[in-house]
Length: 155
Length: 270
Image (tube, rainbow over all chains, first blue to last red; front, side, top):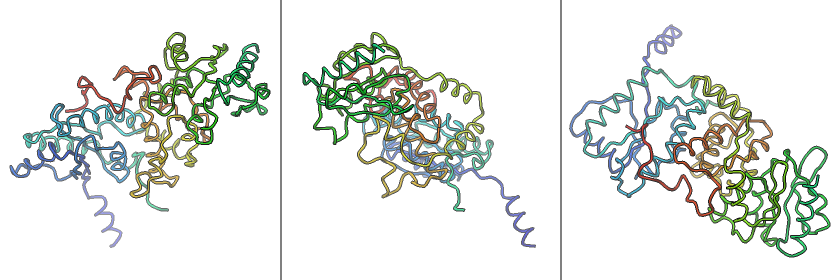
């Protein structure tokens, strides 16, 4: 009986992607807030981590998210020219340009790492973005078996 | 052989006339090539040079123990000269504290100051020189699917014992406290296990973005034979392609990561 219960719960549990979103305080977080206050529906698969600025997003954060079992990571901030700290997003853009290709080389599928600019007025864009990323990652399936950065349980 | 003789003579000369208080070069110990620190002109006879001298001696320049021996003369091939220029650009060394004994693959370019060595690079070695076998490996990797690449690197990184020889060998890794040693909070696991090894290798490579001169010292120092240069070469290709930058060209250059332009490409951001 217990065996049947275990197999049914394991086998029939549909795959739900875990998406970690690193967003900046001033634009994308406000955009997400607008999506919420406007009662827009979007996929509940996203875990939002708010930071002061995209310039504060250390590449290690992305590695850490994959280490902890994220199926995809989204990084989002203010449009170029709109940074609250003038140039944080420009600095971040340079880092990502290089870093995403490094992750691609080391076996993290670029389709699992998304970047966007979402302003405080773009609640609809945010909702659409989350739905789109979630749908794409759901189609890709779980990252677990191949994720090169994944933390393994203690043996 | 005349190249080595000229190198030894110049090393003795810079020590004799006070242009340098110490010469850092290579000596032979059997088949191995070890660094040698010469303060007495008579010892210059120990100096050798050849393609097997892969250690980057620029990594010694910032060592506190060698401070009292400045100015230091250093036996430097083109990639090492680039490292010196990067260190000068990042204000880690004063150009006046370095004397370059510039060596090429089979020629000797004499005693130069840092400005002279930079001019030599421009004239004779204008491009970074990635090793052939690394380019072949990168070609092989780019033909793989992301899953195959993940399995390749999982197997490679699994060999890592976290000895940090790659870090010690690199002149660019000069932070007094490395990110892997920060433990409140701990960003990178110190255990030699999958996730810590992945984070360490990727972050080590990324911290050299726009600064790595492809000297190959990290890969040569790795006791486990992990192809670290694949990461470094890939990053340097991307830096050149995206930002048109090549490290070690100009002692006044701004760092690639740490500066920005409003015109940077952003086709991957929506």
